[in-house]
Image 1 (cartoon, rainbow, N blue to C red):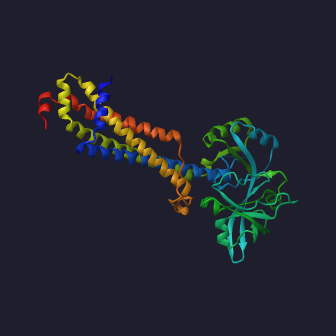
Image 2 (cartoon, one colour):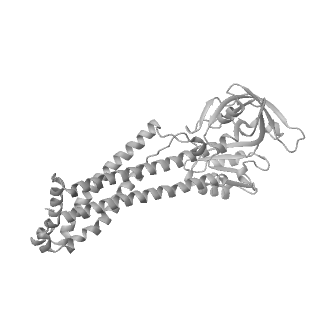
Length: 411
C-alpha cells in the first residue's frame, strides 16, 4: 500500500471545518480562475491573429510575384509584364500552393456626383475565388466575366459605398489616372457587388473589376498583368515557398514578396500581441502558484501535530513530504480541471454568440474572435500543474525542520 497516498486521501476526505480547509478552497478558486484566464487569453490572441491574417491573405494571397518594385507596399508595379502560362503552371504545381491568380492594379477616381473618392482598382480574372474566406463578406455578385470585351462592372467595399452614397445596382463614373496621357480616361461602371473586411488599408483603398478593363484602359496587351497572387495551404511556410519559387523559376527583374513585407506594420502589431499573451500567462501562473504555496504552508502548520506523531512512529521525512505533495497535487488538479471547463465554456459561448463586441475601426473586427486549439489548452494545464508542483517543494521542506517534541506539544 502507498501509505502517503492513503493518508493524503483521508485528509482530503475529511469534511471537518478548519481554517486551512477554507484557505485551500480559496487556492482552488484562484487556480480555477487563473487557468480559465490563461485559456481565454491564448484563444483570443490566437483567434485575433488568425482572423487578421486570413483577411489579409484572402485579399492579396500569401505571396506576390511581380517585377522588382523599390516600394513594394504601394502594390503598384512599375510596369506590366506578359503573363507566362508555363510559369503559372509551375507555381500551381509547387507543394503547399493552393491557388495562383494573375492580377492588375491601377489608380482611379470615383465620381459620384458631388462626391469624389480616390481608389485603386484590382483587376482579376474569371477564376478568382470570391468566397474563400467567411471573414470577408461579399454581397451581390462578381463582374460578368462572360461578357465579350470586358465586364463594365465593379465591386466596391461597403465603406466606399457609404462614402459616395451608392448601393449595389447603381452606377459610378471612374476616371483612370495615367501619367502618360494628357487627359484621364473614364468609364461608367455598374456596382454589381460589395465586400467588407473591416481593414481600412483594404476597404478604403481598393475595389475589384475585370482585369480586361484595366488592359483596355491602359492599352496593354491581352496577356499583360501586374503580378501573380499566390495562396498557400499554410501561411507559416510563406518565406520557404517564396524562396523556393524564386530560385527555381524566377529571373530578374521578377521577384517575390510576402505579405509580411507588404504590410510590416500590421504583422509587427500582431507579433506584439504575443508579448501581451506571455505577460498574462506569467501573471496568472504566479497568482496560482502563490495561492497554492500559501494554502499548503497554512495546511502544514495546522498539521504539525500529525507530523510529529508520524515522525514518532518512524515515518521517514521524505514519505511525509509525499503526503503533502499528493494533497497539493489533488487541489491543483481540481482547480486546473475546473478552470479548463470554465475557460473552454467561455470561449465556446463567445464563439457562438459573439457577445463581446469590439470597435471595428481600431481592431478590424466587430467582435472578439476566439480559436481553441487542443494542444494549447493541454499545454496550459500541464504547465500549470508542473509549475505548481515544483513550487510546492519549497513549503514541503518545512516538514523536515519540525521537531518531534515541539510538534507533539503543538496545539
